[in-house]
Length: 264
Image (cartoon, rainbow, N blue to C red; front, side):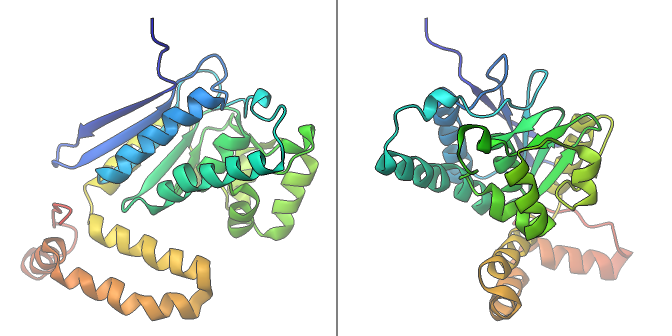
């Protein structure tokens, strides 16, 4: 018998005709990031990149989101192998996830450690349940988080908070993460809230959302001046979309909030 795939990728269509993809970590009992999980994620993210939906939900099954990385992954690696591992995970998971031309929402319902937390930080929006806890605990094996967690945490919460969270290796609750600006919102039923948000995004102006991501990415890489330099082209291109033309006409004819979008 073949092993059950460690992730699941499902595509659905909203009532408005927009495609939503849900990528689920499903590798019991702890959704550990071992080779099977990483390989499954690489395949799923490649599929999403090749055929992007209009919004993505990233979630997990089970009691926890993830107990972290299977430490067997690190046993016996030499320097070159360690470098290759991190380069591969950036190139095939983190960077393609960030580059998806649509909103990506991460739903954390429970414990979210190491790689799972770093993947959450690569998403556009992070939602959490009140009982969720987050940690970058790599110091327990003498390592630092190496899938982009420290820098993306610093971007959201500030460099001092990032140093604290990584160097202490402590767990932080959802309320603290929300206060720090790492988690966007806390919901009692985080799956329902995340699903509603993703469907709302999917029914929205997809090309405009992609332009927003492009402008923010320019700020991340080069600051306000660089973002300003690419904004005219990124925004100007929207005038050639069906969505903008239709929404402008709808606004003028019947007022705001009545437009529908096709993602074109």
